[in-house]
Amino acid sequence: MKPLGEGVPSLIPQLARELRAALEAELASLGITTQQGAVLMRAALGERAPAQLASLVGTDTAGMTRLLDRLEAKGLVTRGRHPEDRRAVVIEVTEEGRALLPRVFPIYGGVANRLLDGFTDEEQAQATDLLKRMLTNLTGPGYVKA
Image 1 (cartoon, helix red, strand yellow):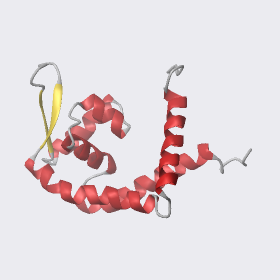
Image 2: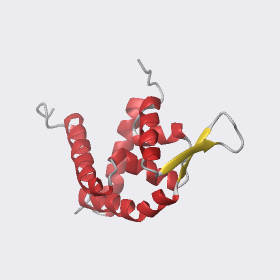
Image 3: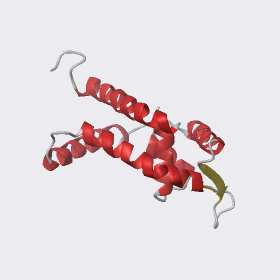
Image 4: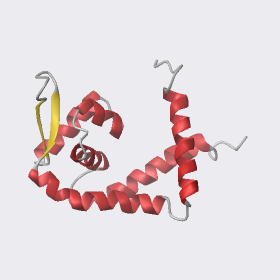
């Protein structure tokens, strides 16, 4: 067993912090946060339901509402009614939001390239598989939320 602070359970939060810090530093010039950028990109790619977006960016319903409020205040997204379900809300990227996307996507790509620098395609696939298994271990079948 690894000494406390050196194993996977300690490294994952450290990696998450450094990844977020790298993205935040680069996105600051655009006036958006990491989560705002992720919502903007995902909405542009067709994920338009707030519940789906919340799960994808790692927040809850209240956090998603605050994110959308901020993105709307910046003129980057709007909330509208779902065309088939009046009770549901859909997120639309505005013209201003779409104009920002060509600068947002490369930032995420560049940070991802830094993160994976020196890893072969096989190593990247293996790391992805291992992380997915860890996630499933914590959230998959048999998981009981307290």
